[in-house]
Length: 334
Image (cartoon, rainbow, N blue to C red; front, side):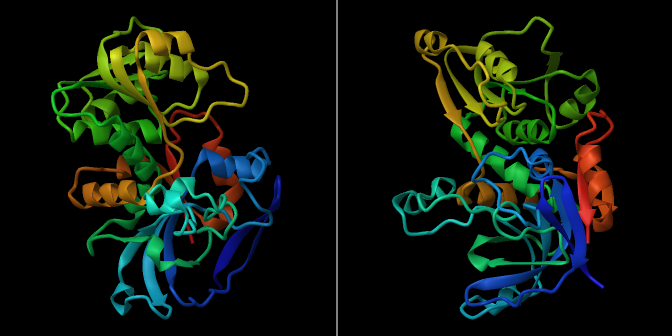
């Protein structure tokens, strides 16, 4: 009997029987291979996700991979049987932001798989086929389940616009940070520094292409061209800005707690820093990520530390929030 996780409200979940929803016009039914757990899933479970960004009761799961089983009217039949990942944001496609390709800024309001729409912590997921990105037939679907966080970092890498030979840095050594290292490494930087809080991430950082590694309490340089911040603390944002040369480019992807002290506007203006931010991934970032993955330039599997059955959802949530350095990405398998 196939099942799905349902979060009824903060701190309350049930495992219930799962009935696939037949795909309507423009939709596809995907057999889920794996669903990743992210800090935002923990927020949904604990009840501290920002107002308007969750709708209970809810089946979570916005990071996933799977195989298309069936498609609805108007969808190419050739999609059936293909391995896929999918965008989370349910954009309207007709506002000016959507027409500009900035679907994460859709002016119709926020809707996202796993937060306001049913997610992938279930045996199947039915969603608009236009959100799907097709993977190579030989793709490892456990690795591909991490392509959603990778796509968010791809959005940051595209905004950073690092060119070969520049000196680049990443602040943060979690899943996002390790993807940022891989995207920046692919652009042939002269130097690629990683700044984190834990020495135990140095080996993996270097495996992914870092040329240097420091913890944030060590002496840090101040002459980098590009810095991507992935740690999600105000402290990390300030550290990231301090690494830049005058006129350098900063991309913030982490979301600190509300009310955090931010960057110093005087410093930003006087040093003429260029600051970009990312929340979610638009289609071009997804396409870039899938191309990189298909070309073998992204290696997500070393980031996965646990694969658990759906029934162990509460244990998985505990693992993600444990702070244990041995816990990397946790995948749930239906």
